[in-house]
Length: 112
Image: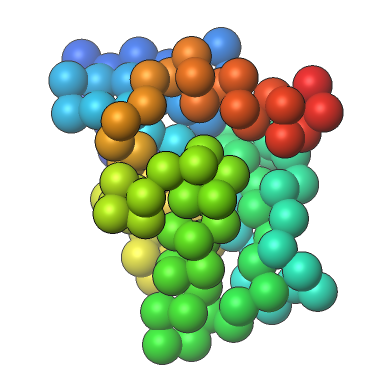
C-alpha cells in the first residue's frame, strides 16, 4: 500500500513519523492475531506492531488505537486511522503531540 502524503509534509529521521499542516502521523504495519500486543520495531518505513486482536469486525483497528493510546499516554480520541482501515499498513493521525515527542517515546519503548 502506498501511503499518501501531502506536498507540504516532512518525514522525520525515524521515517515512520510524518508532520504536515494537517498534524503528526505515524505509519504502522499491524500484525493481527499475535500472541500478545507488542511494539516490534521498524521495517520498510513502518512502525511494526503486533496485536492480539483478530482483523474481524474492526477489532484490530480498535486494539491499535488502544495500544497507541497507552504507548503515547494520550486519549484514544486523539488518534485517528486516516488510511488503511482494511489493510495492515495504516497512517494514524496523532493529536496533541509533536514528532520529536513521539520519536522520544517510541525510542524509549523500543530500547533505543
